[in-house]
Each structure stands twice: as structure tokens, then as C-alpha cells.
Length: 304
Image (tube, rainbow, N blue to C red; front, side, top):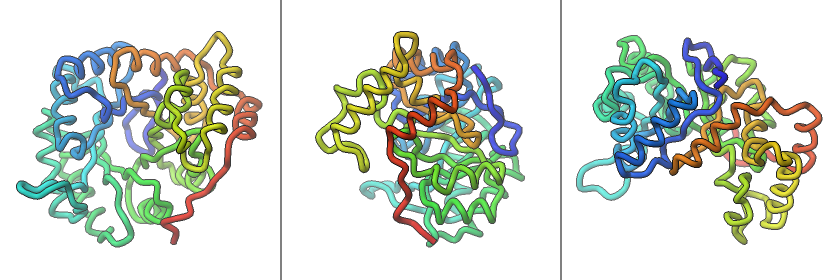
């Protein structure tokens, strides 16, 4: 599995990582997926304290026992649960960030987090306070590096300008090309890496697309458009490959993208996703064809 440097950090992450939100809640089933991921060369595992109110972090931590030095663990903060209160509320205060990290460390069974990410954020947050909290945790050794998980152009641009983030996690796929218009080149120019989530667009770009697309479509695509695009990807892949591999290779094609993190709820899905490592990068001619089949769109909200 190829590994790419994450921003200006000393973290090198497998080009296909594991988005852990899809892990089953059963400890043995989750461990089977994580262990198989290690076997096929995946070293980047992304979770969040939001997933299962911390249960996901616990599952990952237990599955990685004995492998800590082999992996890059990423988790997120900002969504706060409180006993006796329904749901969660957004809390990007410095005090909460510096408190929540210790809960994540305990659940993950580790004494440091490789990549700690703000799980969202708006311009209403006290950004200086957020950055100071992350910088403090890094200086104290509780985290190695930090980033944000956001699709908001106004938020991303401010963190690039004002902080030492090494990565931005964002939704990016053939069906969601919004990052191409103004974000990917900006991040690459500033040596900030992209962690591409949703590279298969909820499975709509996989071999099972026909079973998963609904009448509602996806973003600004109709059901018919998705099915047509999925067929073209199957034709491009041919018998030697898989349309989901073509989709993931598309997400990895931009130099800003360090890793793509499809989720896997079964070992078979994990193996299928990881097999993209054996597929060469797409040619410029292939990339141009895919762009001609899909929409170039932009973020219309969260503008400066």
C-alpha cells in the first residue's frame, strides 16, 4: 500500500484508510475488519468521539492493542454529550477541547493521538481559542498534529491562514466535485493535505450502484444520471478492475489528497476497497472523460 505524507507533518498515511464510523458494534466483528485492514497495508484509522457516543473509539482502541506503533489514529472533537441531556451540542471552546481529549485517549487506550480534528466549526467559533487549545495539546504531547473536518470554504480558508493544521477532511467524490473549484488547489499550495471521505458517495459509485440509488438521487444528480454514470464507470473499469476502484482513484488523483477513507462494515468490503492499491493511477485522458461525464459544481453556502 502506497503511503503519502500528511501535510507538513511526519505522519505517512496509507492512500486508502479506514473510516471507522461503519464498524459494527460487536467487538469481535469490528476487530476482524481492523485486523484485516492491517494485513492489507492500511495504517490510517479515522474515528470520532461522536460515533456511538465514544463506543467507536473503544472498539478501535481494543482492536489495535499491540499495534499502536504501526498505525496513525485520527479522531475528532467538538460534539458534546452531557448526562441527562438528549443528543449533543456543539462546543468548540478551548476548555472543552482540552477536556475531551483525555476521554478519547482513555477510550482509544493510548497516551497520544496522531491527528486530532475539529469535527466541524463555523465562523462563530472563537477560532483563536480553538487554535490555542490544539497548539497547547500538541506542545504537551497529547496529540502529534491537528486538522479540521469541514466542507465550509469560509472556515477552511481561515484555518489555513491562521493555524498549523496539517489536514482537512472533506466529502469528495466524482458525484461531489465541489472541492475542486476552490479548495483543493488552495490546500495543496499551502501544504495541507485532504482526507477524502465518501469517495464512493454512499456506495453509489460501487458495483452495487443500481441497488443503492434512490429516487431522490444524490446532491444535484438524478437517479437516471447516477445510473448512467455508474454504467460508464463500469465500462471504463472493464473486466480487469472494479468501478469503485476507479472512483477511489479519481478522488486520489489530485495531489492535495493524501488518503481516501471509505467505510467498511464487513471484511469483504474492506478487502474490496483495499484492492485499489493494486490499480495504477488514472491517466489524464481517463480523468478528463470522468469530468465530462459528471458535474463541476461549487459550494453555495458558507461563503466569506
